[in-house]
Image (cartoon, rainbow, N blue to C red; front, side, top):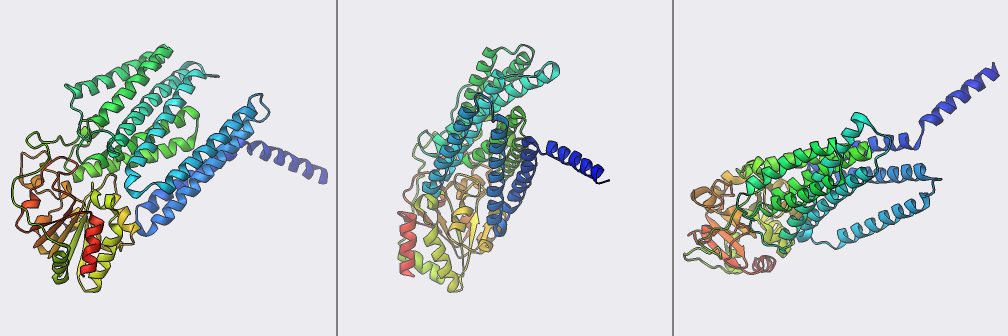
Length: 487
């Protein structure tokens, strides 16, 4: 009996050993990582759980990296090229990790939008390289399976190429290395549609006859289309572009996952792609814009031809920091509407201090956040959270818009297009129909600006000439600090 039990144990042990292969261990780790990524998204959806959400994401990515490196080591061990390949893998991980850590430590909050755009471009480029590798190294496939592989290669290269150049253009626009005005080529919609039709035709051709020159053509087509799509987007719509590129990068990662037979890449790419697309849809709805026009390019605000500098005739009233402090001292309620100018000036810390001082005096202080304030989704929320502003006094546009008429003082700090009355009152304005914060309904409006220049959309703002509006010129951070001293 003992011999039989021993033999059975040996059989079970052998079966268990067979099941615990490097691939199965990595697969199990990928499932855990995917669950952590889902928990990360759930955590990031709420302010009080955001920190935990970041932790889940870090844990999931760590598990994914360790599992991938382990599976690669185990599979390659003993092969003639193992040493070279493993050295290259380790060097790539270490160099990439070091560069990423360095950039994360030195980047300012004002540079986050362009950094995110640049990171999206890396995902797109990786998908292109994976696709080319999949085309050049085809082994062990035939028939329908080979046709599916060719389709995966072609689609992956196309999505990756569009993401790569589109993200590069977004980076150049956000970092002011390229004009923010939309590119207006004749027949641009026809060009975009023609590129998509050509892609479909080339895909069918490549599946039937997988010639290398077809892959070269679709790569060039994708790079050109990505450049044209984002270059055609202008004005204050870059937050939508960032979320849309985020979606593109997700689908590019999913395409790479199919080529690499990596379940985690597929799941993660689908999560990123769908969430990015949904966020873009929500933002477009909040701006009264068409979601389809974002995907097709050409979405944006062209600068008006009647005024090159965005200025509008009319008188303005200038106010000093001492006058602003006096208004705030007597106010019963204050709403602060921040914009990209607050990020540039790094004024969130003195703004948080001003908020604290006013609340100590019994003033009702709240923040009104426009969906596209800043240069990426949630930009203002991140800045205010960084400065420890209580989250319960930070409200979205729809929540706070009806309260402006009952507000004593509104502080417009670095915002322009998102508080422009032309959107609601001038049907001929380039931003007509765009929902904005109705700050002009308040008793008093103090606008913090460096100059009278137009905003990112290049549209003149009649708010500056309203009877209840006063201009406080200069650096936003310095002016808020002046108000604090006067208080």
